Image (cartoon, rainbow, N blue to C red):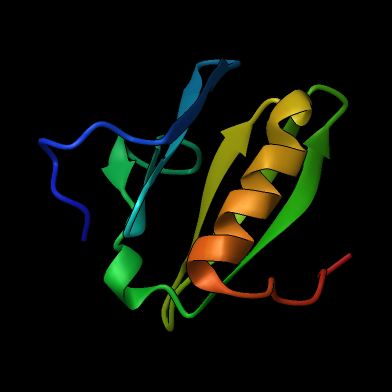
Length: 101
């Protein structure tokens, strides 16, 4: 887990239709939070993430899916941030899971 006192090297966030998604990239890890499909803003338990992928959500948002053994956390990002998110996540977490669609 990245040190919370260190500034991220990249900070992607979106407030979209009442939900918030944020993914912060650090030199030695990733932190993510989301309120999409959650009861409130939730930290994604990155230590439990077994894979990730980016899927379309709508014409103006993409879902970054963080998969754990028991659930999938979806953080929404602007479609313009999709490429940066993919590059950062691949560097930090390895290759994405296959698309479900």
